[in-house]
Image (cartoon, rainbow, N blue to C red):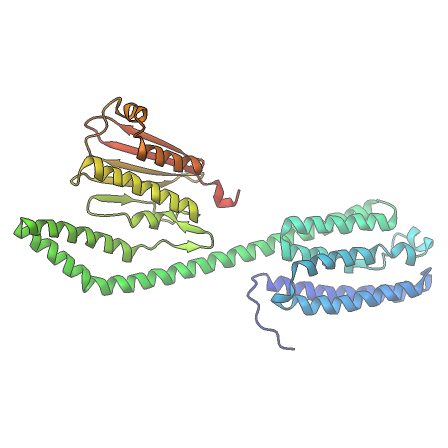
Length: 378
């Protein structure tokens, strides 16, 4: 039998489940041979041992293949294990039940199903599965003593530890894959940047320099060439990185940099859900468009991104003339609060806050705060 290499980072744990299932079945077989003379229904005991053998083979063949670790199969594993365990009262005699050293018909084979559940679904489900088997053990024995409690604690602890290991393996593999993709993208951007620097960027820089020297209409062309040079540099040096359903807000905002707009961001990525990043970029664009419209083409703007852990803060400030006192109230009364209403409406939809600070002679500043609890999927 040829088995393809598994892409599941928890594959070693699945192999451990297969080995453990085989070893525990052999132990259960040895126990049945040692105690079958005392069974009240020996035939039923051998039927259960046979079913355990068949399921051990079927589940092992499934678990060694990545496409065989289906949700329903793992859940059925737990259900079948519990059902076989609960046949013990019809197999063991009263004397064997009174003897605490006589195990149930499934013995330690029953501990494998909670470990499989933990490997497939994580620690929480692993603990729950261990609790199900522990309760079933108490029901089968019709007694809850220190041995049953001890076995229950061990089952739940095994599910917890294996589930944590499986989750950690998968999250580590995902982080490594994300880092490798980022490294590859960075290398490609650096290669592209070198190529563009030797051609397009040098031409734009030359046009800007000569246009400024010539003055007149050429100066306007120089300004446009300068803006395109800055935008192109930002494009080849920064690309919004996507990982699953998240997009890096830091790199997305850096693409807004021009000769008149300076963008300052943290050194690391600021990954947020794609729709949150898109909305924050749209909000920033609206604020910058408002700067160009009301502060004039010669105004400068600064965009600052801060990642505070539980929230991100995007500030957009300009050196324009500012807004006179009472002007916003008058515009609102006349129904002309377009950009302000649009920005605050978008921020409200994200569960954040937007504060506008402006006064004549000291420019205008937007401060947008959005919570980042969505990073944990809450």
